[in-house]
Every structure is written in C-alpha cells, then in structure tokens.
Amino acid sequence: MGRLTTHVLDTAAGRPAAGLKIDLYRIEASPELVKSVTTNADGRVDEPLLEGEALKVGRYELVFHAGDYLRRSGANLPDTLFLDVIPIRFGIGAPGEHYHVPLLISPYGYSTYRGS
Image (tube, rainbow, N blue to C red; front, side):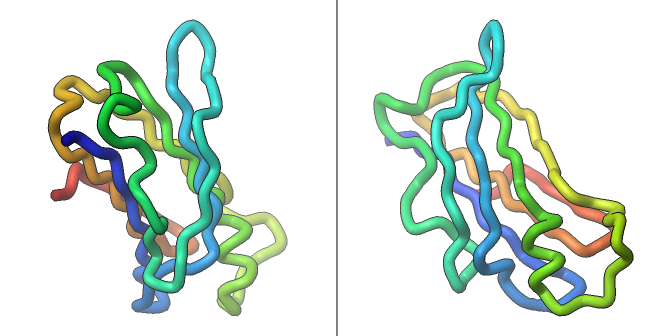
C-alpha cells in the first residue's frame, strides 16, 4: 500500500523540529488543501499524510511553516527571517510506492530529497 510521509530535522540545533506546522496541497487547476498537521517530538507526524486509495497520481505541495518553528526554537534570529514558509512541490507517479519527503532546516538554508 502506498503512502506519503515526512519528517523535519533542525540541522542548526541538531534535533528533530517538534511543533512545526505542515500543510499538504493537491495541485490541480488550483491548489486544494488536503490536510494540516504538526510534527511531534520526533519531528514526524503521527500517521501518513496520505495512504492507500487517498494517494493518487498527481502533483502535490508540502508547505512547511518553518518561520514559526524557528522563532520558537530559541535561536538568535533577525526580525525579518531569511526563511519563513518553505514550499516543496513534487509529483506522485506510482501511488503504490512509499513517498517520503523529509525537510532539513536551519535559519539560512534547507534541503530535501525523496527518502525511504
């Protein structure tokens, strides 16, 4: 059964990014909000974002509300953040597979990849 999962790591602090809000959109004619979740203490969400029949071929976007998390993290940050909201747009071509889209963040950079 296919599924979509994510997790977020704070690379500047060397820990999971707990309490970070994530919005999932399906991109068709216009973006449609599918789900909003918040990461747990391990930087993960408690269940797959999509799985089984709900995971369909198409374009999706994860919107990570990193600025809110970074402001709460205790880091010494300027009033105007370099990174605030981080959108990651990706495609699902094989809905029977596992798509894992992690985010590694710091106040001044981020990276992602298709994980396992």
